[in-house]
Image (cartoon, rainbow, N blue to C red):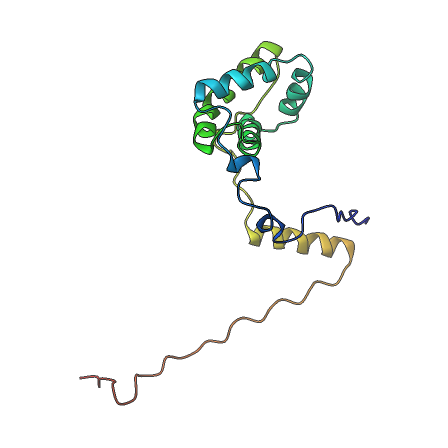
Length: 165
């Protein structure tokens, strides 16, 4: 098994606290104050012929449209394009635009609001599956944790306890 390559190209913990207040894009007044202005900003970008193949490929891979739209609007907030409130208001419009693009291109897509048919596995199911795989591979099973000891309740005692009557 190959270990992933570690990346040390990341901010130092607490680095965000070292810059002057107001130096970050999201600490400035937004470029687009209304949802209409923000939609007018996103619409040409979503319909751009250079971006359309990438967007279609992402939707075909099964990434939910809600996830893509949320990433777009959060990116807009971080760039100082609009506030988080405007981003939330823009989300349904972005989702509808992407659904329309997917249907026009004949792409199978997932909106992300559908109910899951198969529930996520529980920790017990995962542990059982790992145990079965280890048994098939001939590995020794890991020792299980001993059960917690049963503690019998003591009757209340002391100066402030009431006797049972």
